[in-house]
Length: 325
Ligand code: ACO
Image 1: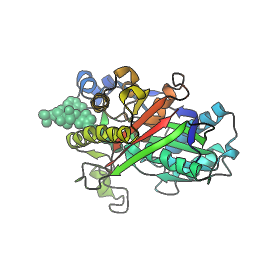
Image 2: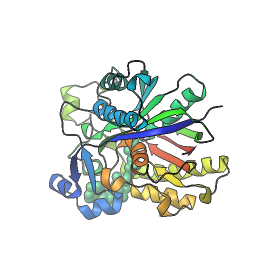
Image 3: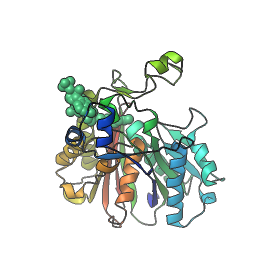
Image 4: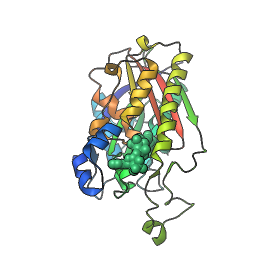
């Protein structure tokens, strides 16, 4: 079977930086606490009120198309991972189709929180492998600032806005997506979710007054689950493919917390130089963290490099992908 390879990467980051010292002015926190507990120094925030997730995803997609030198009309399918769609419907993938002029593409949104990009990438790979699509845009875009409560110090320090996009095509050789493992554990006891805005608690004056349209997170509970989940799933995929740390060129981890990333790399026995980290600059951009890493490291990646992508997030969802660049 054909493998699905990533043939181009694009990104979008808003210009405005929200630094730790800015947050010191907003809530009872400090730079030292944030750096030592999370590894984050600043995040990007999309300030333009008429722009949101679709805009950022479209900009990232346009850059990927330009880098590959193809027109948007050549795209068959757009898969967008997000938890901050522009609207509950229509799907934000439809808005991106229009933004970029991909008039021959259909598309859909995929909701898997911080694991969204991994779920979207493996879904896209199946369409390539089955021959159902030839050129797919897989996009992770999240305007987390739209659901962050900037009076809640335990969450507002963590998140940022941004988007990353990759172009998937059948690879000409042995490179591309080789294996993936995904997990769900639906019993989270409310540890990480957005209580209102969906059909369970539609928007009312009361839900707004009670801050129910914002992320609610039990940080300690999620941290414990994420540390174990990421490390376990990475071991699982390495064992299944008989890989040792020496075989791995790069770990591309979801950027939620530097301590979770370190724990994963330690379990793999992987030195820090082989781990992509940009959480210091962008914070947790949810579905965008992994493609933003691929974008930042694109000039260092070599043809045939073994990559392990891994993520853990709301759902709970988690997973890993093994691919050759
Ligand atoms: N500044 C200063 N103090 C703070 C802050 C802050 N910003 N936030 C919390 N604290 C305090 C707490 O009130 C607590 O004080 P107490 O001991 O007096 O009660 C103390 O610091 C320790 O709080 P913890 O929550 O235990 O701190 P922890 O070390 O766990 O760090 C953090 C918190 C950074 C949120 C961590 O738990 C974490 O990263 N969790 C995982 C986040 C994650 O991975 N989410 C999944 C992805 S998100 C998604 O899928 C959408």
